[in-house]
View 1 (tube, rainbow, N blue to C red):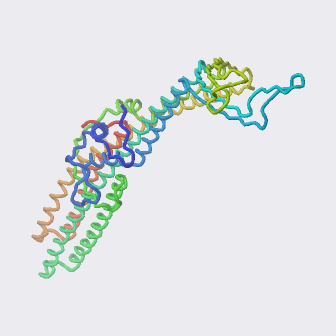
View 2: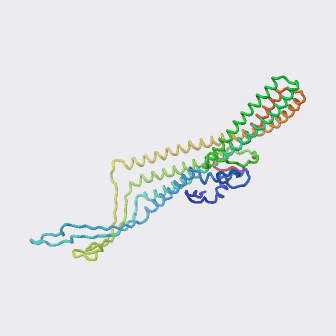
View 3: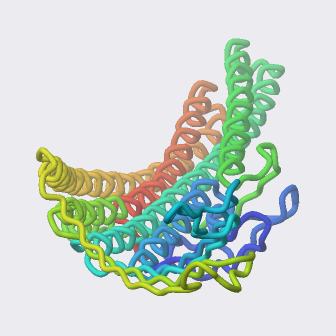
Length: 454
């Protein structure tokens, strides 16, 4: 399917609803919303808006669009070669002496000292050994290839934006987990201090609580740094200021489903932009063979001219010949011998086509492998979500019971710190699995070459 070209710099971006319908998967829900203006700290950026903005502003997509426009002009040029061409020329010749001939000892004038001439010529190629038609078909395939390259650039930037978006969500969750750990350990440190003041626990238990609190605060600082870097990466993809206070909307928990990898592998072989581009390149190479062999044929062209020659800039009169004339010329050329040059060019084009055939087979195998790997990664992420959910519920209950037992002097400070560590680890693993599933889904979509349904 052809996509509309992105706008040139300085023009208002077009409506991106079609791009969103084609490129944003329905399986990743998010609150509706528009892209916030740069620097608006109170606005929230949705996943759909982030993808739309990247597709409108990304340099790689714009570069691909410009190359597509250039190839469209190349196709216009190739088509024009098949049509008649009209040319005109005007010549003025100023001689020192008027031309003459000597006849019987007398100088007989043959022309004026100042000579003016103009002509109009119409040229039409009649037969070129199929070279012009082949060049036009090559240009058509080139335009189709540029469209595929632009689709590939859009697909790659879409995946990159999604992955960067998911990294922000994961980093934000990790910041919350780290901050909750600080709050919980701070509460435990206060309880331990009270118990120590009452002589219920040794000083060693109090020191353990304070060390754990200090480590949790360090973890929170590192988590905030990771979040800042994730936002900077998304800003880069959206061509926003790197330090823009970008805020992203949370996503609902993704629906977990499986896919038929064998069917997706064959679909990827049909739909992947890289493979489409290679197939177009194979067809262009085959036409290159035809183009090289066109030199074996004669070339025939037709030219029709009208000319005027006379006195004065407007060639009003000519005292020495007819002031105007018309002519029709049929020209045929045939290269009979060139030391094997035409055969060598045809053989080179044939070998290049064979090489592309082998490259196509190689990439098809690589695409199948890529889909297989992405599908297995998605399956692992899906399994990890279920496992992490169960582990998180158990860790929360364990922490609650351990704190209750500690407050009743039935557990040690070490037990509380261990339970807190288990809880933090379980929360981290859960959110890593949740957003890892979305990332794996984005990878699988790119491997297949299309958005996957919910």
